[in-house]
Length: 297
Image (tube, rainbow, N blue to C red):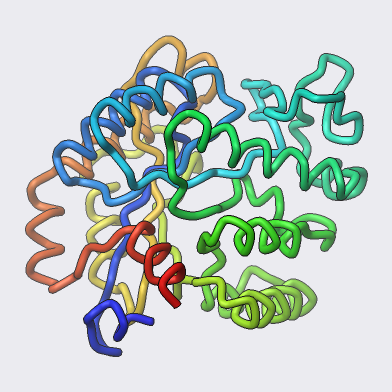
C-alpha cells in the first residue's frame, strides 16, 4: 500500500490524528488551529458530543476535509453522550437517563448488534448530512474492539467500511502488543484477515503518549516522551494519536486530564517537534490519502 502511495517499503509514514473533535468548543478551536498550522494531518470527530455540529460547521467553512468518525458507543466518566440515532430508543445502549453507559464492559455484554449497527451508521450519516466526507472510522474508548469481555463489534464496523468505502483504524501490529492476552491477539488476527479480505485499508501501527496517567507531568518530560516516540517509529504507516485542546471550564468539567490535553496541543505546535520529524525523515500523510487509495482499487 505504501508503494502505491509513492513511497518505499522502508519509508516511515505518519498520520498525526487529533482525537475527540467536537468534545468541547476549546477542543474544536485547538484542532482547527492545528489544521491551519499544518501541525496535524487528520482528526476524528465524536458525533454524539454537544459541540460536534460546531466542529463540522467550522470545518466546512474552512474547507477542512481530513475528518474521520470516532465511533462512540459509551459516555465519558464525567461526560454523558446521547445516541445519534433518533428514530427509536436504543434500549440496549443507554441508561435510564437516555445517555450511553460509561462502562465499556457493560456495553460489550448487553448491546444488541442491530442497535450497535444503527447507531454507528447514524453517526456516519450525521457527518455526511453536515457536509463531511469521512476519511476513516475508528473507535472511541475501544468500544467496538472487545477489549474487556472479548465480544467485539468489528465486523459490523467493517460492513460500514465496505458500504462507505472507508479505512478502519486497526493497526496490523496490534497483535504484537504485550499487554494483550492470547485470546485477544487471536481475535485481532482474525479481524485483520477479515479486513484484508474485504479490501479495507489498515495502517501498521499506533503510538501515543501515556494519557491520563500523570496529570502533574512537566511539559519538558512530555516533550522528551514524544521525541522518543517519533525517533522509534518503524517503517510503514503509523498513527500518532493525541487529544489536543485548549483549557476551558467546559473541558475541566468533563475530564481531570485537561492539563495533558493542553500540553499535547502545545507539543504539536512546538517547532522542535516539527524539526525532529524533518530530521528523522518522517513523511506526513493523512487518512484521506488512504481512503482515496482504497476507493481507487
